[in-house]
Length: 361
Image 1: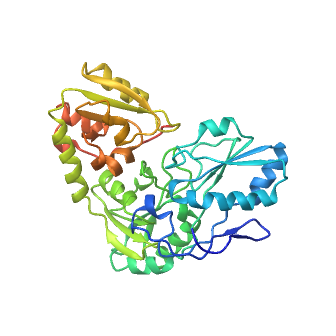
Image 2: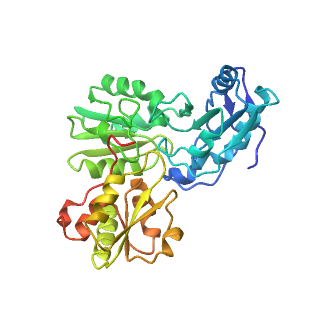
Image 3: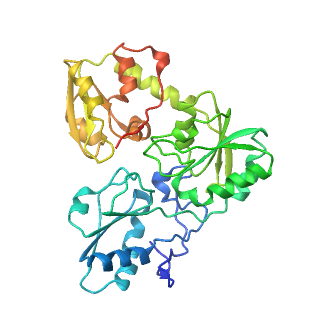
């Protein structure tokens, strides 16, 4: 990456270099959450230094989500300037797609383990979660959303990166005459009004419309799938755009995968070994009830890893985003557990729904 060197202020706040990277809009996996706005994130280095001192730590492990891995070496450099010379800083190279995707190998081998980019899903004295709140002003996009919303009852949800502005969003809507409905979902969610790519329980509110404030379209599409009776308005402060979640294209893709799998003679049932993503009972139930289904265990589920098995179709019981984000890349149909039940004739076609995690760790 080009640009100037990073800088730290007295509180350990890191200012990334002013550079412009080419990214594809609306896709958090490719953006590093740095689309049209320059960011100044607080990596809370002072809190990490305090933890090292308290624990007399000699090894510090850092884990970053995929879009922020390019920042890792610079954060490590800044952290090393603040730590004693005998403290070693390690960077996890494991894929990371959420707070449920922790590098347990590194956790066991470091004295302090820092997970950047997500809010806590499971409290632990061993883990320091640094959520990296966005500094983007949400007011302009809220003003644009007024043209799409109907004044009255409205649900409000956002992602972890914008939770620092949630109270501001709610107050702004209330000042405009809206009755704002919010709630905290189940135990996988840290904050009131927070949604994950696998959990939209915070949208279980008494309102026919929901305002989603955040980058990308995956979260609001999942929300719209799980709550087809609600109008989901997407207010994207990163791309500066307002739209309504349209699930038609996504549904057609999923129906197509189900239809292709109906002729499958054998199935690979994928159980993901990543902490927080395993649904053993679901996977085991499928295998026990289908003599032509075989249980596969793996940490990272990719098309290349499955190709050599040669099954006609696969069921993913791990993170739902493996199916929804990467489904078209698999050579054979990759289905969710619910879609599998449709493909084998246990459920009707119109029962197709979005796969989510609730109360699971």
